[in-house]
Amino acid sequence: MKSILTKLLEGQEKLTSEVQKNSIKLESIEKKIDIIAEVQTAHKEQNEKAHNEIIKPLGEKISVIELAVKDTSKDVKELKDKFDKVEKVTIQNTYDVAYLKATK
Image (cartoon, rainbow, N blue to C red; front, side, top):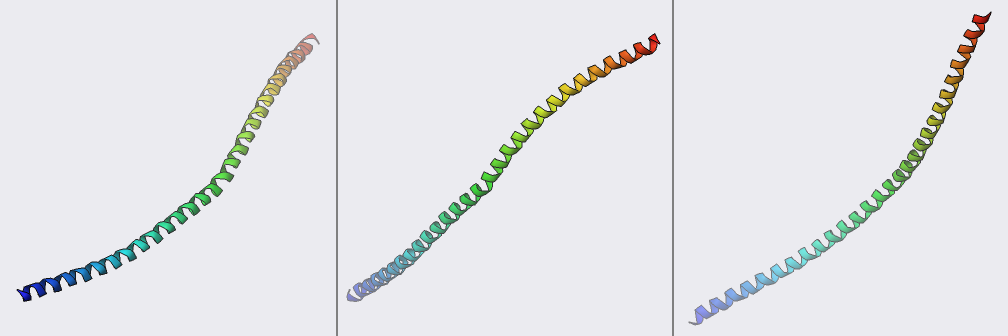
């Protein structure tokens, strides 16, 4: 009976020892996971900052391009209106020249 009890106690001590080793390993793994999480958070923040630094100038450039397109459209419309006026005057002048030639 004593030998069985001794074997049981030895087995329990081995199990206790293994549990302690596993606990130590788990603590180490938890620390490493915490470090990885911190690094990932830092990388995420850096990526967001870099993304914003890229996007902001692009947004400003787009605004400038939009203004330039609006301004160019306005200029094109004005030129079209002026061209229409020049075309009308040219047509009138053509008729006047033809009339003057005919009356000669």
